[in-house]
Length: 313
Image 1 (cartoon, rainbow, N blue to C red):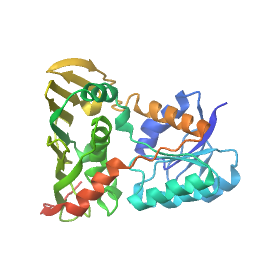
Image 2 (tube, rainbow, N blue to C red):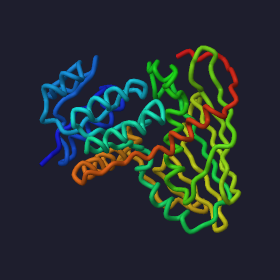
Image 3 (cartoon, one colour):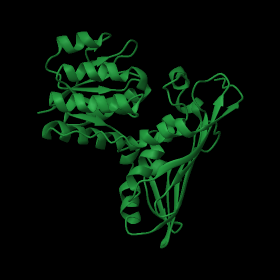
């Protein structure tokens, strides 16, 4: 039987990814939405989350697509109401609130899932398997995109807690933390803040690898023209490049696999997330890996702040 899910926060990512994924899956039934502004045709809509929980005890799962700052209160209320919770990335505004939600879910006997959609990109698993048998020499992340194209009108991303360039950058970090056989930790960061914004528009990061490999990342929201989402790896036995956010894989400059679906750069990622959530609910599992968010938090702790020209959309 399909699981009834309520989708909370009907914005661009919900309409583009969550709604079509849910509608295409036999595991799920989109039973309600909650939003102050958006709706989904043919689906019961609420503007009040508490009212939805009260009126629809049949809804087992709540999928939260809200910006990170308000997400904790919604997730906590859902857990107290006995509902399973799926969290769009990043799972929360702080590490401590995410840990609290995990503990609440454990106590309540419900599932909670911190999703990282870029880990589900088509070639990430193959890159992880290839790297598992090799010694890393260097890993370079280049994640440059046009904020005006991908986040039009999303003022929240420039407010405290909105993450700025780390909103896409955390996708890269989710891949890095998935494919590396051993963890790394941040050693230095430079964060570039527009003078009229509370979050950075660009960032340069350096990490410490336990075997001495050079691990760096460059994130930039000011990219025009070609959009770049690439992870380049050098090992003692060849090189690997993940491009297009993990959809394309090349080993020693030879393309091994490539997936492109025009108009949907996340093809396959969200179906795999929802399949994972269905399994967690049915087995009573919890998946709250916060390692990508830890690196972002460390960047804000260690980062040297550089003020740049104001951002005008």
